[in-house]
Length: 459
Ligand SMILES: *[C@@H]1O[C@H](CO)[C@@H](O)[C@H](O)[C@H]1NC(C)=O
Ligand SMILES: *[C@@H]1O[C@H](CO)[C@@H](O)[C@H](O)[C@H]1NC(C)=O
Ligand SMILES: *[C@@H]1O[C@H](CO)[C@@H](O)[C@H](O)[C@H]1NC(C)=O
Ligand SMILES: *[C@@H]1O[C@H](CO)[C@@H](O)[C@H](O)[C@H]1NC(C)=O
Image (cartoon, rainbow, N blue to C red):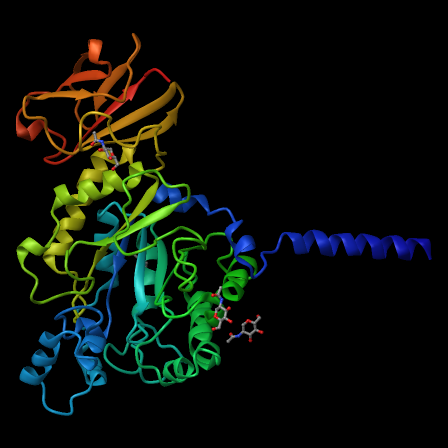
């Protein structure tokens, strides 16, 4: 009798113990989960916007909505001038052919970019699923257009050929899904769309492709209770096949963004320029004007390596990750301009990645006197290495920095350059004065953004 009582008590405590380790569907509990550290260490990811919107490839991934609401008259004119009357948005799907889609080649390009994770759009606001979802009958890449599992094929190539983590972007809402429109008409008092569409397909995506990132979007119309967001996240963290490795963002309801979830995206291209309390990510795009492939883009619309290194430096110094977007073509190619930018970034990271990957913010994020110099740091056997990322070559070849305070044992080197760096203490002004190495351009480690490593600084 006593024994039974004892075991019941034991069992009771065991249940409490196990239960306390499980995440509850509340934001307090969801927020308490430590972010798996691969994410912070990775620093750089690639975002890919690909879908039926890639077919008109004209204005934006919002093409359908811009057309139907006539919010963008240019889109209305474009349709009137180029398509027969009665042409529907769904008619574009047949032209989403992806005949040159070679996920092994994509994997090679993504690996060459120096990124450590990829986030593929699996379904944008148009609702088209890039995987053969059983919850999106005939509006998915298996049934129409590519006739292929675009998501699964990239996941497989990424895992087979690279060390990158595979992640998925997923839009909660869909512009014109009839169940969504019905819930909206009911002031979101019904959840038919969430119950029948959004949630089943999210579970399907996670169970089938085991993504390490679930990058949510399309949250802003309704608050998180409509989306059942915490219930999904509790499952993701407790019971899903990726519960140990998965990270999520913050776009889980109009009242949640920039407040709760995993890492914070806040708004697109969020790059605050100052240290943040929580892990965050700057999602931005190489084409300044769009996330999807855009046939009317001009050369000047694309960020160059100098722009990209500025994004890297300002973001990583302040504790963020950088998610760099490319828009593949409807026939499945990464256009050469995107490929070039990715390979250039990879080249820069090959030389300077020591200052980026696995780095931590330093006590100063940017310099106190010279603009365009951003810092990161890393613990080493000998103490702390501080990295100064110099975005612009100083006019007189002399770099005076206010934040670092050198000692007699300070050592200054330039990443990717074997020569000795000539420097002295900044004297009365304080700081440190570095003479930029005057060498031929061929000997310079890069033609944009140079990184000085400083060991043995004052604490
Ligand atoms: C993985 O890659 C190897 C070499 O590139 C290839 O031979 C093999 O078929 C690939 N396996 C899968 C499952 O894609
Ligand atoms: C929301 O989550 C609760 C608790 O798991 C569940 O009972 C309910 O059916 C879910 N609703 C939808 C629309 O998914
Ligand atoms: C979220 O919306 C529901 C109704 O759609 C409402 O009952 C609830 O109070 C809202 N919660 C917040 C935090 O705004
Ligand atoms: C450092 O960054 C802060 C925040 O962006 C800015 O206010 C300040 O002017 C910067 N310092 C220099 C020297 O550029």
